[in-house]
Image: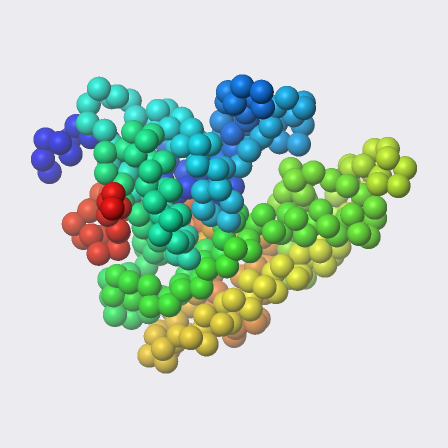
Amino acid sequence: MGIFDALSNDIGIDLGTANTLVYVRGQGIVLNEPSVVAVEKSTGKHLAIGSAAKEMTGRTPGGIVAIRPLKDGVIADFEMSERLIHDFLTRVVKHRFLMKPRVVISVPSGITEVEKRAVRDSAENAGAREVYLIQEPMAAAIGVGLPVEQPSGSMIIDVGGGTSEIAVIALNGIVNDTSIRVAGDELNEAIIMYLKKNYNLLIGELTAEHIKINIGSAFPLDKELSMEIKGRDLVAGVPKNLKLSSVQVREALSETIDIIVEAVRQALERTPPELASDILERGIILTGGGALLRGMDKRLRQETNLPVNAADDPLTCVVRGCGKVLSDFAAYAKVVERSRKD
């Protein structure tokens, strides 16, 4: 370890559509905030970033807008993403006068070259010295502790906010991967549409997420749940209460979950037979926020006839993987891609 390494802060970032997590070498996960920026429309000045901005979502006056700069796991608003990364890096980098940090950022496996460049430029403009990219499923697999360097295959399903990544990993590489832009955000959207269509009730994004977390499920529950929700009656135009059950929410989510299940099926069909037998033995690991949806593992188990297990602390698998890469860069050199200026 050279003098530069001792002086620089190595940072791992899980740049997610819903949340951004930051890992600093030697300190662990130091930041976990929503990927939201609140901006004043007239001046373009940012008023809040992270949790404070998320609380403003759907509640802002006309002059303020809450923006999520990442859509489907990739940068949709370049300027806002840069502000977001810059703000988070500034919060975690203590010695600004020393070396600029080396940064490992996780990206969806289906990302294009243009999107990769946008991530790299955002991080460099925000103060990174070197930027390395790692594919999300690979980072999640390393974070969970799967032996990615071995010839035996491991399968990981990472259901995040913007993308669902399904990958088979062996020998430090992704043998086949399916990346679909259907994940947590689409589940929230499905709840909003269901209530609008069936009950003429309009709810916001935060309420939909609240419903999903509290009573959402992908598989019948032993004891079904229910909750009171508030929204606006689309016919009368006044606020209205409604009692919602987990059975109704499951019906609302079913089509979106079917898309994820179908993607898993297709990924299994494309897996080489030797690796398929490894997966049968080891099972499939489920990570990301989607792993927290009740019964998601049971639903996938039923559909694939394979053992499916949700990872411990599924929300932090990807950033923990970035952290492991930072702690032993030489060992993981094959799984990261140095992002250079062309």
